[in-house]
Length: 427
Image 1 (cartoon, helix red, strand yellow):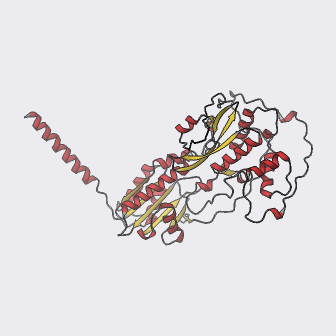
Image 2 (cartoon, rainbow, N blue to C red; image 1 turned 30 degrees about the vertical axis):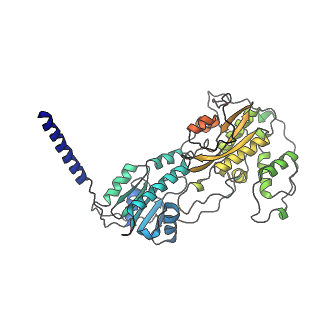
Image 3 (spheres, rainbow, N blue to C red; image 1 turned 90 degrees about the horizontal axis):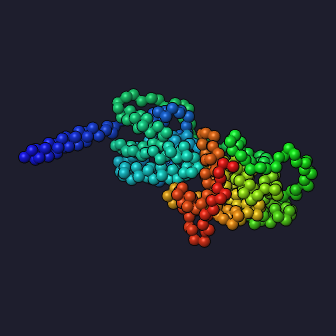
């Protein structure tokens, strides 16, 4: 009998708690606030005011819904999108759905957008990736809301304020509509350096010849001007074989101006010319120069119709002259450097982010053993100075290490990297 009473008591308490929880979860779904006011209130909760905006009624807004969110404009009766742009994942969208819209489907589309944005930042911008990992898409009444915010708790709390009956704040004038980006400037050609990292006091760098004791090099012979007949507008495409043939033969006549720019940039790198370096020293110096010289193209990470990617960011011309690249730009430049240095190298075009995002990296063969190198992920976009260990996290590692760190690839015909003797160890 006592057991029966205890059981009934537990059931009664559980039922009451469930009812109380259900009552407490009923949130008001009506508000007099506009989508602009709601979006701005959430945005300002993050301590930042400057942003780009897209608003209902603008053509860019409809295109953004369809192309980025995967949401049909016909399902949206009003809305505002605010985003930081550049290498920032921060984004807030308040969408007022039509009565005919499937709210659950719109919410799923926003969740899929969060996942795709996570893939874009994975490995490239760890701080922004962390923001995306705790982002959310919520739904209340006729509203679907995207919250990609550094302080997710404050974002949710400020969204609740919009339904509390409080008076809305006016949207500031500093919210500006998205505009076309300024044309990218060509970066000056790289300096002829071996390794631009500043070594830590306790770290012994590889012994490299000092430029101070070198004799003044002879004046180089002027390189030929590009042949206009060989470079019709839009006809150029990167060809590694053509570049290597010219590099090894010294015959640069008749080359396209972009080919010449690549060769001139490589010609300035002492690490490609110094015969006293071992293959490992040369590889390390070129890897470190790449990390110091360039950055991941922020146009590939920016949301909205601004921050267009730099042309040729997927090949050495964009990397060497513009100082920006995507993973294939990093990998193809490293491949070119290694072959110029007569180091066996292959480029792997695989995947990351659980096999959903294209990614590229390299493998090199040193002293008879294969190693993996991911220069792109060794050069993450961060608000802090990247420490040397982070800048060599994917330098000369094994294939198994890459598998364990979000790299996937078709392993058919690909050598297995098992070398450990030349892994970076703070040298």
